[in-house]
Image (cartoon, rainbow, N blue to C red):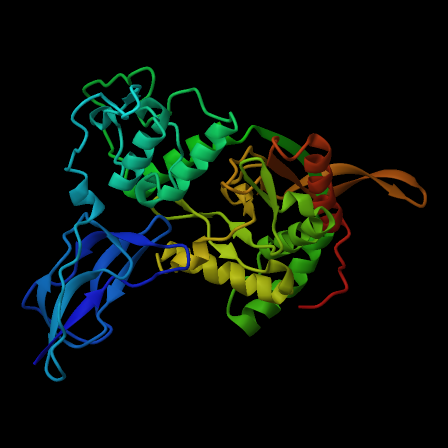
Length: 428
């Protein structure tokens, strides 16, 4: 008999910790190799963790609800053969550490005769790790000020990187003087007897916080362009049955639109940037995020990495695959990270246009409206004529800190140009 530690696996290059949602097995249960043992949640996606060995689950080291760092032992599995493995219990999680309050007085002397004000974290509306608290005390950041920092950790928690970045901006004089917008409304909701109260799930709370943070961080401006996509409609109608028969999947408009976006990004690379304090990071890769509505009503944004390296056929397969696995909750954490520009197809809901909210730290997002038949004036060799054309609106929201109207408007116009000049002689 031997004992093997089940370790919290690394689930993506940017994932450093995960929250244990539910244990699927209990101590004493027999488990097979690669059988799912528990469900975990990261700030990217929910997923299941399989056992690396067959045997019996002897002991659970991390409870449901705990936030556990990658590489930490979370359970012990007893196997039939092999040498015994020394098992060390997982360190206390941030959830457990939350109960420890080291701050007992509001201020103390720093040894030089001056008074250093110590934040009272009892008034905080969210959890802060001991490391973040120590940095806040050293930098004399009040709790009200700390609450304004946008957290990138699990459940929106402020990480070491978040607070150090804020401290750097603080030194430059770029602080936020308003209090953090919390989930509680300024005016309390009125509730009557017949009203139904629905508690937000974890994903909805995360979406809500990120949307509020994005509107606070980025001054949003939206430009609109109407595009004539008649040629695309006829081309798709010509090939969609052939594509369905050959690939076993649908040929939608989305990959064609993404191709036009990718081409326009190459023409206007300053749309493909991110903001880091007073620095603009010009991204080399073109990674297109695709907003997908889930059956729960929530929204998730998987990413097509290096979209400029795909042809239409490859983009169609990538779009269908990511959308399908998103709805089935089978995405990998890395497939939700690294986006540099996002596309949202609001036309799938029958909407003609929208004002989408930017996915931080990106600086732009494009909403694709519904394709509609409209009477339109067209030029012919014999003069102007009215004809029925297929048209759609493109709504481009961008961060006015770094994208001015000329760039934001020119970019969406260029997307429309690529759509209108679509080569109908191409094959798929």
